[in-house]
Length: 259
Image (cartoon, rainbow, N blue to C red):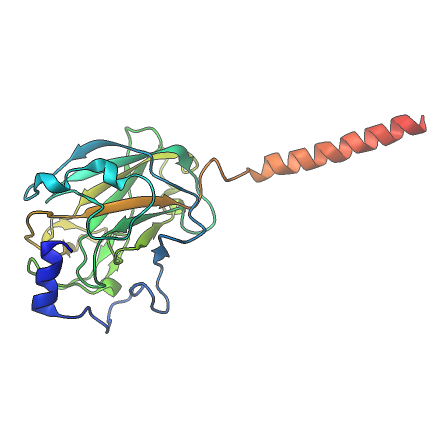
């Protein structure tokens, strides 16, 4: 277990069990949107990375981007940390597409439901133009380096759920962006939330999370799982065309035999 996790348990004991905010609760509770790393709906995982820019307060131990590739491990150690204000972009052999419900999920390594280190999520279909998912934070005031936040006060930010459970994102949320092809997303960028209130949500509210942490500071990325990708989604028009073509061919053969 990471040092910051151990200190949190010593200072604050068990995770929060009562929630007050308007958003989905922690993993395992009624109404939660958490995606298990073993959910059969996940069809693929990130295969590469680029533009890893580790932020401050981060030791070399946690600067291994390859640990964010492949299946989520659900542990405190098999992660790459972004550091304070850092970022990373993950890539995918098969682009993510917009399907029914959540299209991908981001997995962090929090050991509890309330020690949550957060990140903004951006996507791109060309690697140049990135678009940020709307995010909302109602945490009322700053928290210390080992402080806790209520997950029901958080929406649209990666890191909302404990290790082994991913935060889901639906590409249809960004369908109005003209420079984004939501059926051809090959890049997902994560931007660490500094946590001191200097960064803001979509309503211009300050975003707070544990600050200031060191060693493995900032968002700890385990993996990104994909529920809808080009390799698994067969476009309905194409499927219908094949079906209709088969019927026409059968009718033509039958007509020829009668002739």
